[in-house]
Length: 217
Image (cartoon, rainbow, N blue to C red; front, side, top):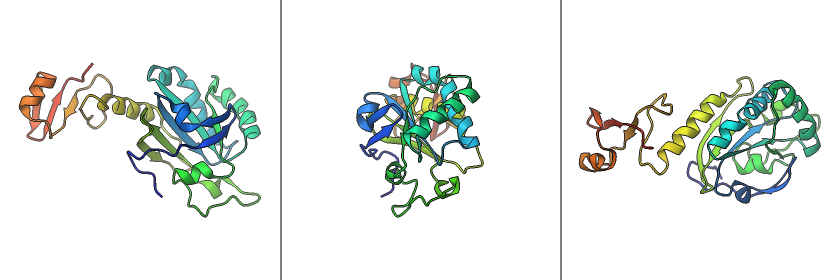
């Protein structure tokens, strides 16, 4: 089955370089980002893991845990982290799931159920395992993005999307295109003008269905 926005993610027990983890227990009351890779010791993926390592303080500020997935084993992950830290100049303190049996890749709909890893495989055999999943404290999938092997992910955009999700969740607002923290937010069309005034105070009517106001908080 496909994993859709607002679906509860599978509560899987997985092996990582930090030991055995139950995904739901590991997330706890935090936000979480699961980012996946088709193989260890590959150039684009190494730079991406390095970018995640460099953002450790930013994840912590947002109450967010990060966990990698790669379809290689624990020992390879431990060795690869040395390369990641060399590239990043920062400690890669997050766990990496050893998905050599493809259980996570299939459960998160990155590979079809019948997929397998052939002997002598290359990253092309698991190329679709290059996704980002943002998961809320309710264990529901909030956002997903999938990239090809040739395009490195922009983790500044992942941070921006996380900020947008955290702003909209619980505040009853949406964020416009290119929104960054500090920008105005959108009042949903389902909220009447009277209720909008009571909840947000002043707002700007750009169009009858597009009203903006200062971000709560």
